[in-house]
Amino acid sequence: MTLQAILLAFAIVSAGVAQPSPEFEAASIKPSPPGPNNTLTRFDPGGRFTASGAPLKALMQLAYGVKDFQISGGPGWTESERYDVLAKAAEGTNPSQEQLKLMIQALLVERFHLKIHRETRDPTIYSLVVGKGGQKLQASAGASVPGMSMGPGQLTGKKITMKMLAGMLEQQLDRVVADNTGIQGDFDVKLEWAKDQTADAGASIFTSIQEQLGLRLESQKGPVEVLVIEGAEKASAN
Figure: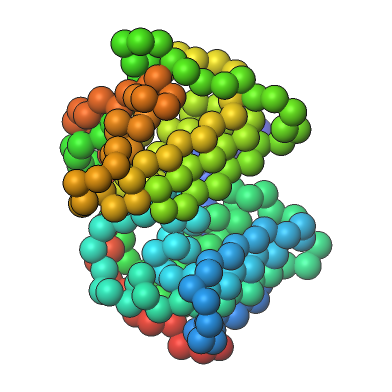
């Protein structure tokens, strides 16, 4: 057998062998002490990942790149029990953020015995489009970097794109929001609506988007990938 044939055979065999997922060299997961229910996560150079006050479902959102509404099932503690995480890659390595996400996935499987499967469902989603009267957006003025904040009945963005606005609306509506406005550029956005959407007072977020931004949310069906939790166990302090 020639050298070229040997190398080709080796490549074919290697392609069929699953490569092991990268893992942290050391990791600590502990129940968070009592205090404010704030979740903070951070990636640092050198392959370090830290989280404080993070429920399992929040860690899953980060590790798998999904939104809250894309995680289904699981016991109630996956949302209520909070954990502090400190994990470190091997010395001398500097994994990318995507590699770190794979490492967090492996960590959740190891410490929480997390078992999931993926499903494609067809729920209601929203398409963000320009309203009949035209958009009323304000071009960004002065902000050097994007900034976003949200609270009950209000949403503010500085130097944001329509895709970023759609992402903010997803968090408010717990639904996929697709940017189909066709609008390019950066904008300063301030949106206000009635805090209590069950009360018969004040404008809904849907009405406010039309009146204040000149945009519209159209309801439609669309495929959404969902992570279904088959099993999980609480991580013990370590």
